[in-house]
Amino acid sequence: MLKFILMSAKLKYFLIFIFFCAFNFNPVSAQEESLENTSWQLVAIYSFNNSEFIPNNPENYILRFRLESRLQIEADCNQAGATWMQEAYTLRLTDLVTTRKLCVQPSLFNRFIMNLDRSESYELIDGQLILRTNSEVDWMMFEPYVFTPSF
Image (cartoon, rainbow, N blue to C red; front, side, top):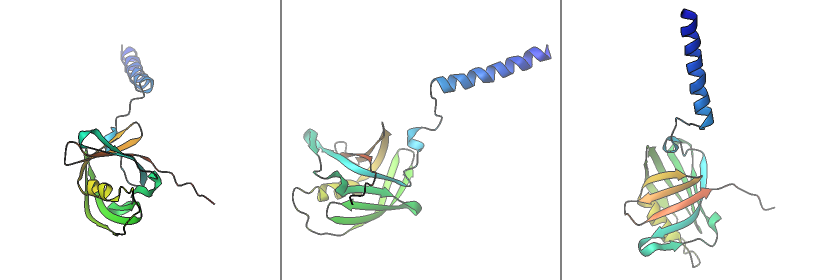
């Protein structure tokens, strides 16, 4: 009888293991993934009336989530920095500072920085980062940024 119970327990754990493997179960949700040491480039900024702003050079709009809660920002012809804090679905950016060069139009600098300053939440969906602001209509979409040297 004891041998049957032990065998049943082993079978039970084996079946649970197969279930998790078969469905590619990941007990850590996407929201618990840390943004630390990741870099993202802007795909688009969305706003009221279904407005869509797509940068001519996405590589000019980069977010680099560094160690010790430091955020390095490239915003067209300007550089910026902030501190960041991530908890569950929230993302807080504080102490945002930026250079204020006048970028050649059509620059998204002002809209980009304004939305970053008002960011409140984020989502990781299909390998993309979505930053949502404190308004219901303004949000930004990013894709992973991979540096490619151009020698």
